[in-house]
Image 1 (tube, chains in turn orange, purple):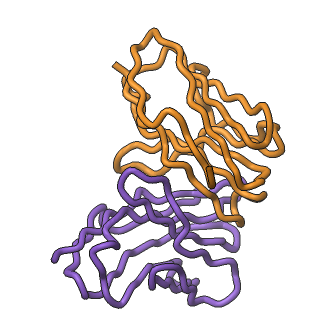
Image 2 (cartoon, rainbow over the protein chains, first blue to last red; image 1 turned 90 degrees about the vertical axis):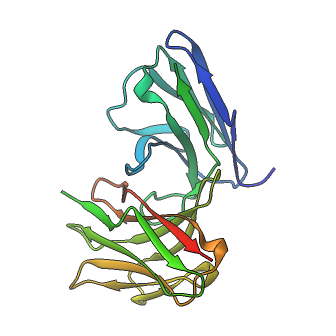
Length: 114
Length: 112
């Protein structure tokens, strides 16, 4: 595997379910990100991890819970989601700075909340 | 507040015609500027970026963009559109909060 991979690619869940999204980067990068992509809206940065430490949490509801066990893996744990949480969730990584370094994106997980 | 405006959620051009995708930004600090492209069912990938060197930046697939400070613009161009250019294009600028500020995207449609 190369680049940034995400599993699953598609996920349908009820409002009471608990599920997790997984991201893995094979680039040796030090920073990883979760973004939410909704149609016709700018990408919303949710969480940033640098060297496994969370450095940003952009007022994301607590029903989203990130986990970064090592610099190659990033998880997003989901519970009691709302229908408006349906979106494409993108994982990305970069060597270092999020504002100067190129970010490499995974293909995303398409989440539907019923 | 910092922001990025991409004019036109959809742009349609004929194959072989000039592509022009517009991006205007506001930033309180000298900016780094990016264009990313997203093909269907894929993540975003970098097309090109401006990092305060040459104002005309060349990217992949024949795209280029020019940084114009006086106009606070970073428009993306390609002389001749190809069917494979059909995708969504995102402009982003470095923010003072150490995050990228993203535009809402422009979907490029290529007519045969």
